[in-house]
Image (cartoon, rainbow, N blue to C red):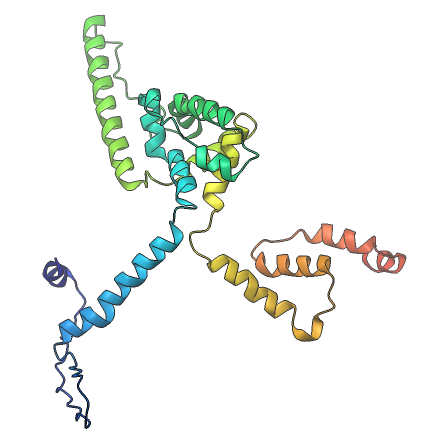
Length: 278
């Protein structure tokens, strides 16, 4: 596989250089013999490949341990693939679905959540078709004015068959490009169709699934911003001001409404009202 990638790639790779074996003199009374790896491929495997695999396995064990793997399994039912499976066969839903998730989030009623989930899966195709526009809005029909009814019906049946085949091929091609295990597409359908009030518990679980961080980068980034804002010289800052400054620093890509800010600042005092409102 590596040789095929090397042949098909347009990037030139320099071969690994074989360095001279370094001999370390053995001290008096030393019994151990530490031999360095001279083969560059073996050295890359030991120092790079094995290290990456070891770190990956340790991180997988840490992040997907027995305490949180149950909730993640329940959230996997919200993927497009599982929803389509439940749509075809509602009896295939496991009996302990959403059990671990509801134990972790006690504000969710498990029975109501399962009912909402089954209703959504049952109507998923209709909801998706009403939200997403088709590729072609009007089908192609032949002009039947100069033809008899039998020929017109035959041509229309042939056109419908061709359209169905094209739709099936298009759907299969789109599914190949779409991540069927992601819950983001389901969440977008919920937001577009305004289903938050129809399925409140299911929408809450969907929000949990799309906002759950995979890594701790966002948390570490927030603490780094906190250290930049609240330094040792400004330890007497009150909590409300600190929260506002952190929100401004973290959400600086959001464009604020300047008019609302001016009106809010003008209402603080009569002097600001005279200066800002004119």
